[in-house]
Image (cartoon, rainbow, N blue to C red; front, side):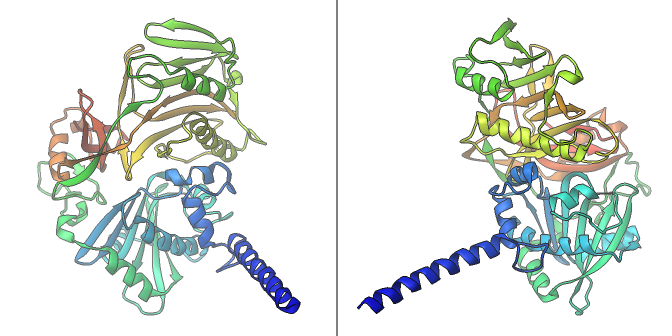
Length: 475
């Protein structure tokens, strides 16, 4: 009897050891190759990993995730935005292939026509919301020194060219000099083809690229403004979930929420026991530490330091290392939201290019809220100082210090109501009615966006960007 109990005890210990060993193996990056860990990817995507500082904390908010994935299968095509069904399955497989390309040293230059041919093959076309220096892409994918000879990138294509030698072509557009690079990586082509065939569901004719319709060429047309080659054109209207815009710092009766105001002040290291403040029209302004924090009834908070050397010092070991400073900025946004609204998801995405961080000591970061992968353009009108807040977050940093910070403290929960968005073609027609837009030569992008009418009702529309980097919100 004692032997049986002893055997059972030993068996239990062995099982526990096996479970612990397996868990440590999974999380310690010992499965697959050294640079890839499927479970780490899942943890990072779910926002559970703090291993990588601010990049990890904001991974759920789409920092490391592309804005859009287009799956092409000759006669069929589908587009996936963040949080849509199918996005995760496609991205996790594409990520593994792209990581191989970042380690590859053998690249060749290809022509623009080869780039477009690759897109039209069995392919996955991945687009990020902003441009990244290749070193930042390496940071995001946890690769210290990417081998790819590219300066700045925003999108890439993984394409199957018809060969059964278990290699795929990875094409990267170098935004720095507008050239195209190609490398070949080893991968199970059968698995890739199955991925493409399973996720390309709509006919190409319903979702063409501008270059397929020659909208990117002037020809004999009198059309003054061209549509960028890679702009996707929805031929039919689309359906989306409606959202609400809820002010997080003001009550329904129009008073500031004292508990929320106190949490925000603490996050900026302000004294909350006896704060110095004064009214400014409908705003309330707090003063301390050579700075001010303005609370606007619209839901916008605004921090300003009186001088660059009086700003909020970021938690960095080297203020001259701008990549470290940038990462600390993202960490600041995450912590602020966690302190102020811990029960609500932070659906933020960086909306300003992440380039040239080694060149300037002062830079500006902008972010926007998103829902289901679509940007939210609330365009808050702060009547007190007669300005419009087009971004969710605007931050200016100098030498490792935040010298100004603005954020729209609002929540955007989904409702049970569905709303329609017009076809992209109709949206372009509206653009041509805008006199300011007619000065543009090329529409570089046009993407669906949430906004609100004058009564506060949610509507679906588009945001267009031109060759001068100007944005146009269609209403």
